Length: 100
Image (cartoon, one colour):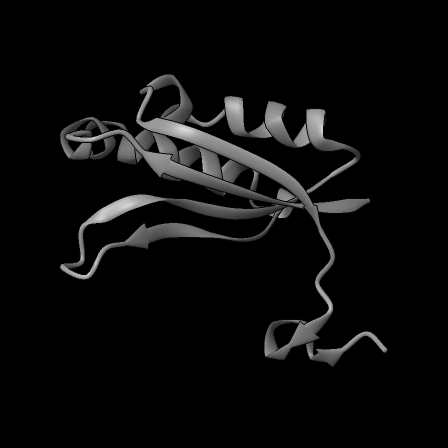
């Protein structure tokens, strides 16, 4: 299984839409938690949400995108831009050190 970084930036003025979909989003995350390495909102300097960053386990980029499209935030159409790239966790305390 590979890992993919998914970087999503919010459209302007979508805070209410994000808030309205939050409970369904959290329920979705809880159902699919094993697919995630890490996930969470990205914030601006004032603490407002400006996007989402996820690292997911998937067989390929298309499968990672399919996971994202199952999220209620995707249906809420809050993201202006979505980038999905393969990611290799190589170093840091989240992976317990380094891979070399």
